[in-house]
Length: 66
Image 1 (cartoon, rainbow, N blue to C red):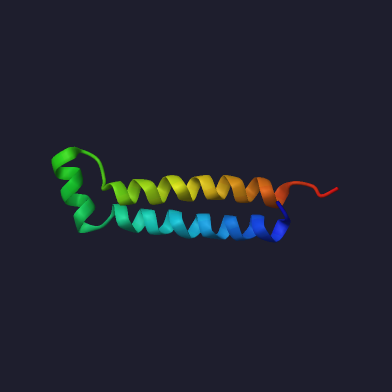
Image 2 (image 1 turned 30 degrees about the vertical axis):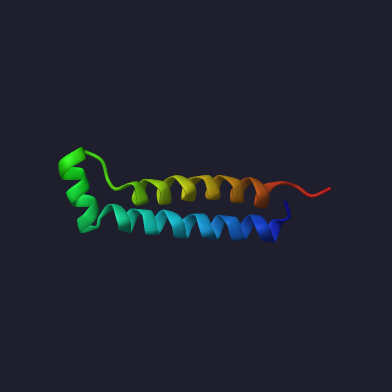
């Protein structure tokens, strides 16, 4: 993976984490948390995919090229 692609993945991951945090603070997530004890599936998936994208982006952008 080249550095620009790694930086793009890092940026997308940060955005997904921010969207996931906003989704977990939404009224729908509050209702879900009240009845099930967990935020909505959308919030969880946004956070998980965001963290995964950040990890992939960091490894791609910090890797040395030959």
